[in-house]
Length: 454
Image 1 (cartoon, rainbow, N blue to C red):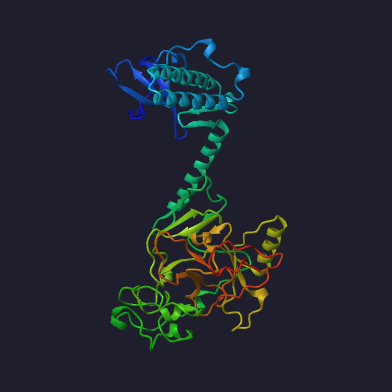
Image 2 (tube, rainbow, N blue to C red):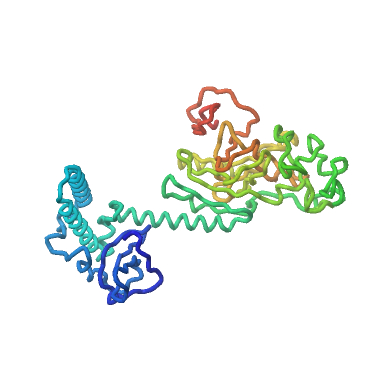
């Protein structure tokens, strides 16, 4: 009666139940197949155990499974090994049915009765086990799909609650949906991780003041009414090439230009102090993520990130968020990580302008995405990546704090894992001998060098 309707939301008294016909685990909840006294002939319902008022065990044995005798219930001493014995009985019974069917025997009904008797014994035995919450934690619960340990059920319930809690957090992220998918196991990402809308400024980090920030003097109706003109926009003064970084019109509008994708040049977007408006073609990353994302479990590299739709070449994915900390704090965290044997590294040093401005290493800041961040925290490394990180600045006088934005460096098919090169190098490094301290690379690309760092 797998197709029997499920009666949910109504409390049913055992006085209304005429027969208990079967039981099953539906997901993680126990349900009973019953016939109600008030129902029409042949009407049977699956009712969740939580919707039954009274002792359901008092009705065991009066349904179609037949009455239960003391001899049909395994003793306490025979509980151990029930799973193996029942599996052997089912196997022998199945073999007997196959043999008699092929030989043209007329005793198929006898085999069916024997099989029913076996099911009845297991059914009655396991109903009795549910009389005590203490015993269900230590004994087996037999279902139509096999035998499941009660401890496993509790573990799955805990895992389900973790997944639900993580999805609640994902639902609160602004922008297109961010979902989670796992067909590998029942795990979920660490709940110690928290999603944030913007990076957190930590102790010792000094952000440049608004007084030191400036904007362009362009007019909103310049450049076909889509903002600034490259000949006069002051925001382009610090660009290596005096061109707007983003495509303004056509099929690739709103993507990073090919010329810029081939460089590692910083991007200086117009900001809130500029005279242009929100439609300016030099404003993109500051408006946030525009593509849906999915955090998924990989087969060999933990959690990864992908997009359920096709991503255009040059399309902005999202920024890398986290705690912005000082160099000394980053060193302290790294030492502590090594002390406890941790291998994951979520530290990203903000050193884009260090060399050109003679900024010493101990004055640089670092973004730590281990406990706070965004979806890009789950992006894996690849020696042949499909995304690249670019520096995007709005405060053109601040050489210490800026956004780390990810763009697709080629068209990416839907549901393809999004990756970038953790070492942030501009070309493929030649393979060399791996050091003993090196972190193995599992990207699987044809030009994989075998390690990530050092």
